[in-house]
Image 1: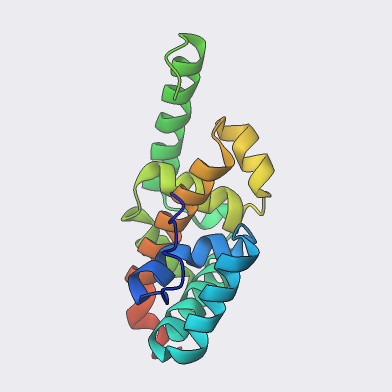
Image 2: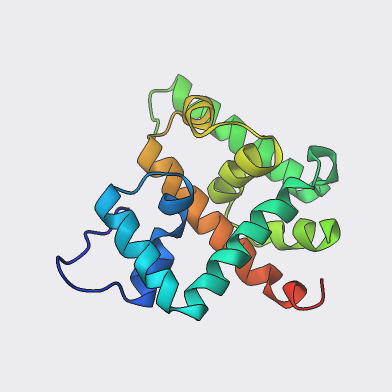
Length: 93
Length: 66
């Protein structure tokens, strides 16, 4: 889901929030990245939001696969089986 | 904090959680995740974005007291 940024309009916060992952992934065009960084420079709220996303990534990275709850593992197993089934029956995504 | 992440993870829809787990816990690259799940780069980023956003929302109360 890439947002098309309106030309010559500054980013609003909702757009900036939608672009955060693309920004962190290095997936923004140079122009979009510039607009995004310009918005961050003047918006403490979005700067804080980005800091929280970075913190979320860091904290999540400290969880080991073994830490995942049993329920989560069961769901993964079910998902994987469904995915295998869909793949094998040609009913994939 | 790991406990908070574990609890928060339960609230994340399963495809989003799968991508977040592979990327941020297992440490796979985006290209590897696309290969494992047979999804496009754009789809991978959307799932990653939604999953991380949901986690952030759930973990927000924790940030103040870290």
